[in-house]
Length: 334
View: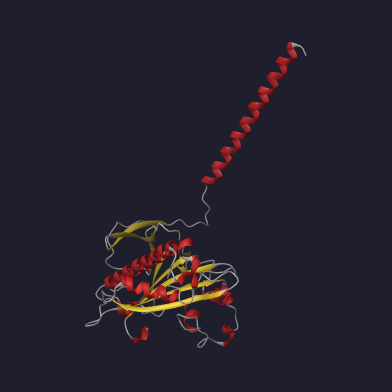
């Protein structure tokens, strides 16, 4: 090969290399522009932290709003739903709670335990008794002989205690105090796997002043974050009891439908703003009896009960551990 041929060949390679580099830069620039574009179907929500001081611990209450209000301490509730991001635990929820879920070949409810307590009770003792009920008859979790298992057991107790204290504080702030009585509460833990373990597959509202719903493991509940948009209130209130979705009061045509078909008639998911709760995230949802027990009658808090349900669809292998809390204001709530 002559020197001239080598020179020509070198120049050709250089031109070809510059062309490839230019093409690559154009592709990268185009990709960046595409990522910067926001889809018109995506709703952006801003979350402003609100301090909730309980036992010298701070918890961020997240409230969806278009323009963030100034930060304030929680003295009253002005939204029908509150999302609480609990303090980060040093123990992974998968390690802490999922060992308590029934094995994959045993779909359905693993356990469903409830305990009632009052403001006079020691939260740690109450939580310990509740978890003892949850692990009764289970050799894997009941003995706590192993040091590591005992450590997990203690961590579970502390998480339940934290939830009890926060819910009690919330109720003492927002609900009217019963004269000459100690306020009573009900705390419940349910472990389940698959669709057979789904407690509330149908859209409904709760017949309580307010309810604490927290998924300790697995997906949280779904709720509609709008008062009227997409909700057929007539269909909801005239077909089945509020809390359980019972068929006793429903018409025959509605009863014959599957839960999925019922849900389509109650909530239009193409219009309604449906929020999916996350693992460990708390949902404080106003129920149908909020107006009866709200602590500030002079500043009426006309809040609609929040329409919600268990997450769906649930795969056969999907597992959850659910913690719920209610305040017992009278015999009708027990």
